[in-house]
Length: 495
Image (tube, rainbow, N blue to C red; front, side, top):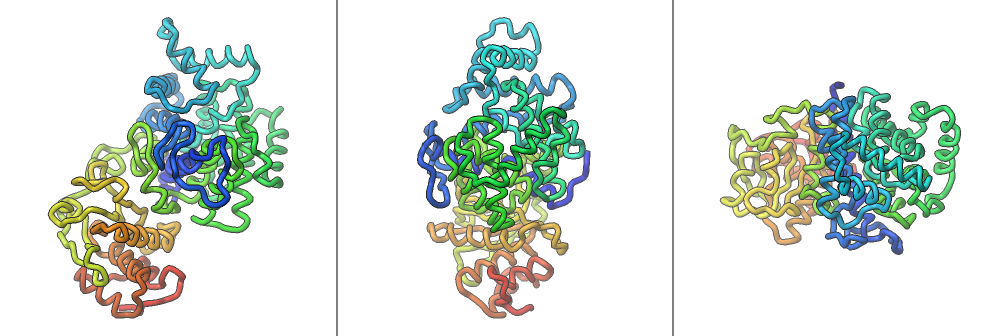
């Protein structure tokens, strides 16, 4: 298993989460009129779904992740059997929206009184093959839509990733084109996480010789054609082309976090199977730009089966990337990251006394402090999120690494602004906000300064006041970046 850098961790963490965001954004427009501008998490769709709720695309990806996040050997028969069992368990929960082909396979296997006579993975794939032999039409987009997380399963081994992608696809989709599309997308995700670049053609050599040239032509067509021509995207090839075209064309005018929003908007504006195309695109965008690229307005709302939220998807993705080798007491498996060794602070922000600048210890004191919203700038355990009655939608968590090497934070200025914007938005809703990191030495004052800038407060006295509030003189890369202001212009002098 390879050792991941901070940026690679961020990008791995973004795969499931950005897929889910794209899915939830696309839900309201599925087989309906696409939006003229940026899509909104309105809910509804074919479910109907709540605002921010993901659909079957991400639900099935979660099924895969729940197995891949364990220490099971992915080259063992038990791996594919457990994925099949997770699919059946999900099917038994009576999901609101399931693709026709996937529904047929899962229904037949769940009804089979003799299914225990052979391994469930083999039985499921057999039912899928029977459907293909009878109809010749099993190249729907239902395998591709869920495949993103498979790209994290063997980051150091491209052939093993490709093998896993095809095996999971063939549980419900026998047509070789379905497996091919999953191999290409998973390899692109693996490349994006490891190298931080977008390259769909990089997986062509993993396909059978006889289909490589055709796939190269399909990829070239996606890159040269307007995304909206791929509106009949129920077919796995067209769904891949739609997602890739949206990513490529939007990426010609914007980059970084802006590219994520522009590409998801372009994917949904294609129309037809909007949640699926945006989910497919989202997985690759997340692999390229990371969890840190997403805005609070999306991450605060996104949620779905089986009762998960943004932080759960990040944990699942990272545990998958680490092949299940995460100790119970360490992040992202730990139940708490509160050590009790840090000082309690809860100091009022000098420009807004309803914003308390604090530490992890203060996270255990939200009721005592009268706090009803939290903005966290550090790693949390599963029990640390939404503590003591804080609503999940009122707890923002931001990927911010306390390090002076700029490479550790892919989008530092963006994250500082997003965290400060979260504070501002929560305050506008009348909340009392705890803004905290571990010890309030670097991350908390940097975001506190950016928040003051958003409120229109400039000058060296602002930095001095924040330093006095936390009884610490901030310094280093985070503080220097915050001082430059959200537009890159220095607005406060150094201490």
